[in-house]
Every structure is written in structure tokens, then in C-alpha cells.
View 1 (cartoon, rainbow, N blue to C red):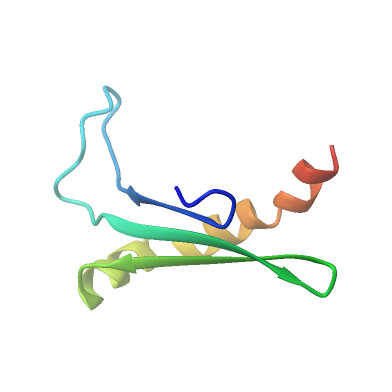
View 2: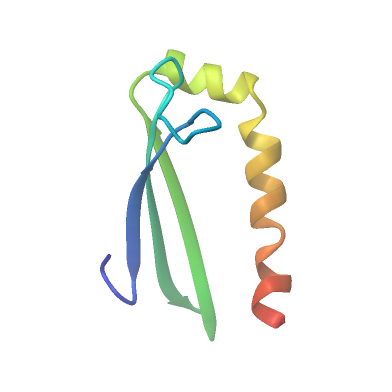
Length: 79
């Protein structure tokens, strides 16, 4: 964590007992926050080990899931 400008983490999949699933890709994620036009610009970057790993996650619906989650941020901040 580089408070208050960024944080990073690894993100993967797990079974019902929270054991990591070695058959599914893991991403390294960096979230960065910068001042922009009187507000804050948030940049989210996820990096995968290979193009094949990224393709697998895209097939699993990462674009739709991430878009849905990010689309909720403004409502959470306003609450």
C-alpha cells in the first residue's frame, strides 16, 4: 500500500474452503488514485501471466463482472 495514492494485490480463485485453485489464472492488480479536474481519477490495471490466462478469464466473464463492480463505486461513495 502506497497510501493514499495506490495499492496492489494478487487475485485468484479458490474453492469453498478458500483453498487456492491452481488450475485458474492469478492476476496482479494495481489500483492508482490521482487528482484530476477537481476530483479523483482511479486507474485499475490487472496483469496476467500469459495471453492464454487472460483469454481464460475473459471467457469466464471478467469484463462483465468487473464492469458491474466498478459501476457501483459512485453509489458506494455517495452513501
